[in-house]
Length: 430
Picture (cartoon, rainbow, N blue to C red):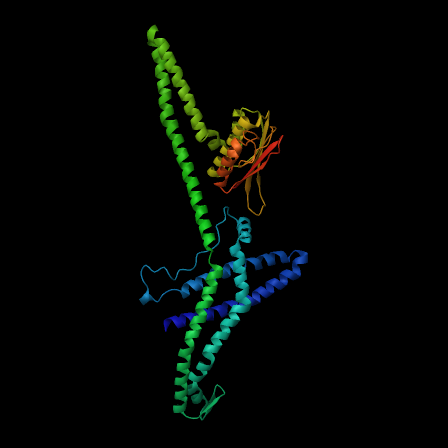
């Protein structure tokens, strides 16, 4: 008997939620449409579009409660009874603006709105109709003795049967009980179908769940990769580099006291130690340059331009970003400049960068690398071998650069007509 009571409560809750919801949606829709010409209605229409979000939370919770097994039947490892997973993603930035932009672009928001409209104008009237069909007649029959007691001599039950004695009233009440028990089964079937519809429309799609899991795991991998790169940098800086510095100093001191026949050999060893120290420093700079960590992406790009074999003009003013974004953007610029020097035949290059806001995709870092080379670059083998501003061998350089950006959901756009110039535009969500 516990489960039919739960299913009945679920339908009663649908009526209690849906009836005021229909009035609220009608008021919001009417006012929003009427006031749209004076722009006042636009926030109301936006609120109407987002009204499905709280309704979705409530309906997922109600569906989860409906599926919960009875306490005496519950298995300790049974996962039923938990509300479906929230289909919404967490905004990358705090604040109402990023939250609203993300919600308006999610499919889950519009599925919840579609369910809310169905609940307000279709589902709750059906719930009420089913409840009335199940309980109206059996309820009238069950209360036959009470109706007779209130009327005194006789009463007409359900406006169908005239009852003038308690034996007859008790028999009608028994018939009402049997009818009620018989009708609880179709009520249960309807309530289960109704809850299943809510789960189908409000729970996240399998593809959305997988996409969220892939995105989160990719973010964890990026963070782990950056942490490991910083650890290797520290180990080289504090370990191998310091040992080479100490070795170079000892060799220098040994040359002062060494006999002439050993001085030349010590000098050669000293030069090799200095060269190894220089290579270690370049390696450390390539793993994670200190200027990037201390001063940010703008100064790091300027430093990379100074080290480029091709003269580069830089027009970059950027705020600080997360470590993963700054690292990916810096090494993408380094790779682009390396390809310019190797393959473009360019005499000069230009770098500009900025941060785009207000786009439906959110805040994005963009960087453009342009050269005056011979062009013909293609991301995936579309250009001639060894040509183009950054093309590399049949585009392999650009493919690697695009893969580096894709780790952070970034994009690479290439404009490289034959004869040049080549323009690379990189964008990374930030």
